[in-house]
Image 1 (tube, helix red, strand yellow):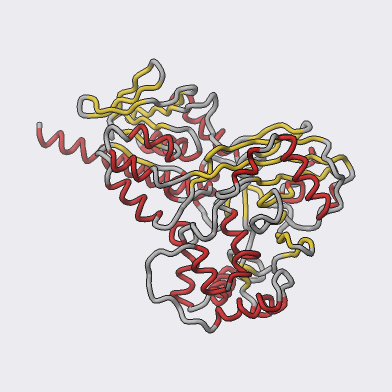
Image 2 (cartoon, rainbow, N blue to C red; image 1 turned 135 degrees about the horizontal axis):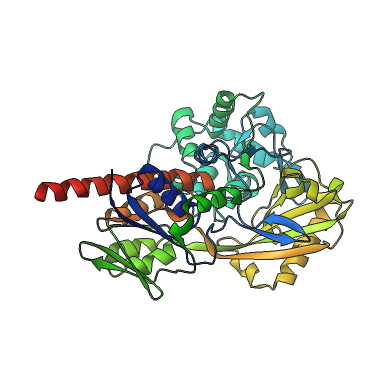
Length: 463
């Protein structure tokens, strides 16, 4: 049995998962979780718009990454798959469907590359050169844009693949690190000598006939996961308790939160990089400096509920992505298609993503302006009314960590500079998706237990 006091700072899905794992692994551990807001859950939350409960953060997690799904099964949460599949690209000629057989937006069928109308003839011919170009000899990191441009060309990068991949990180394709975002692409080039052949091999391995859903979620919404974790942790969670100081204390650590002080043998910081840096500054200037090298992009979601009778106006599919600068939104999810519900009746319910690294000036507009801009562009691309019946805007300041070139090394150096007993996990470090956060949280909890056991053995030997 392991004994000790562990303090988890941050009550998003990462912090909650760490707390749950520690609690489950050893009842002898004294685990407390501090959450700055009035409720745990972080960005996995919902808002009510026109009487409908809609996701304000992530609406699903990636099915091919098993960790979140495994945790849901462990918690007894039933999973559901989208009601439809397929995505579109916003073009000057209207919405163009992505080929059905793609991996990371890259077709695995050469015929699809040759015929796809989302690119010009010259753009398609340039993309096909991926099949004959020499592979990169260096195994070091490069930008996502650098890899895509080298293999597929500028047009495919800027107008087709880049918007899909960089959009998942609300980032700029020419600043994001390949190894930190999509290391599979670098592996494809190394093993197959081509991204198209890499996509082909991946699709063949997954089974072309039925590759399965791309996304899944707990029935009723992603926040059911954090609600279940919060319920199990119960009184161990302290809300409205923002951590303001971290300092050494009698061989351990002391965290101040308001007028309260929390002693701990180990501290897990599960907060954004910008929030962790000032806590670590007095005890590790190197870690704080490294955290300062992980910027966060501000984003918002614009939720739109249209009148009854509009549900049929949406094409089959889950939504579309937008090349940089072509529209006020970076992407749009057709919630009423992707997650059909009786509550929607026959209303079109959409969610637009606004803002990204380098495009944050759009967020200076008032909510009404964002709603109007999105609605006007949607009406031009789809047979929807010019205005929704109900709408809301949810803003997420500096919420999306940017995995820029060198992110993998940067995170390793930050962790190497941490004092013993301090641990970092969360979206800023090991992946921005729910599944990646769960995977990293599992590993962090195991590292905390191993460190406590090692410390206990050392103290026993000294005695």
